[in-house]
Each structure stands twice: as C-alpha cells, then as structure tokens.
Image (tube, rainbow, N blue to C red; front, side, top):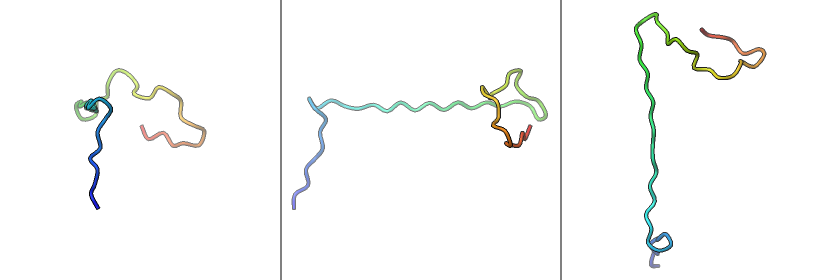
Length: 48
C-alpha cells in the first residue's frame, strides 16, 4: 500500500503562530490591575 502525501491546495504553506505571555513580580506584590475580567461564579472559592 502506497501512502499519499498531503498537500494544501496550490501547494500553499500553513503557519501556526503561538503567543506566550509571562509576568513576574516581587514576592508579596501583585500587579496594579486585576487579571480576572469577570466575577467569580457563586460558590467558587476566592484564593487571593
């Protein structure tokens, strides 16, 4: 059995961008903004 090589139409290439965001701050300090954009659901423990 011969395997067929996959090709995109018109031999186009596909790019997959990957973004990683990393934040660091001093021990015991927090950023001046809240990273959460929505309120916690009722019953969810707030671990801050």
